[in-house]
Length: 262
Image (tube, rainbow, N blue to C red; front, side, top):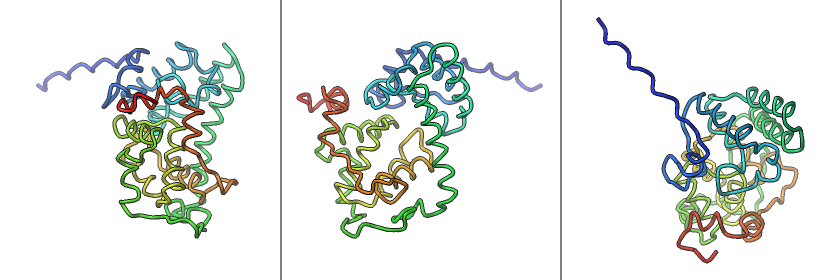
């Protein structure tokens, strides 16, 4: 007779300490990731109910260090272990039982933004992967370089800009980067280095644990000025962003300990 099946391994428990101190590749990782629906629901419960962080999401969502500043549900959403309808239903319950405010609305808005890129990509088709993007027009004053000498230091976290290098090191070591970090490094590559934005999108695709083609390429076209942004001159000043979102240098010191004077 066939050997009895081995008992299923117990589902990992996502305690706050594990999330804060763990990581797939590096102990500094913002979140410890386990696959599957059980882990996804544990993270949802931790963020909404156990730590009650949803009530302040709008105020904290641009944070960069630690596990609690944002929901960090995107890896499970990206692979289908968690559905946006599940999240929306749980937010609705939270609004009934605890509080309904700008923060609860804003988390739902982010889910809608995710859906927007899916519908937009249906309309854009392959244009979302082309240099000129959905706009089908390029700024002739920018280089759009594919020279590795231009974009190579960006991938290696060696640009000399501490905020950019800290974000890129976090991505390489952990497979994660905050939303604020993604906007900054994307703007730096496309606007300051004048590189082909698709190099960045492809780099993200190769490393992000939460990669989703519509959100990734859609957001890159947005930041590069060839997508659905009505502000064609959108630009992120890296020194200003560092002052605004990591004013004490906590995140930069975490990932660039050699720059302890930040």
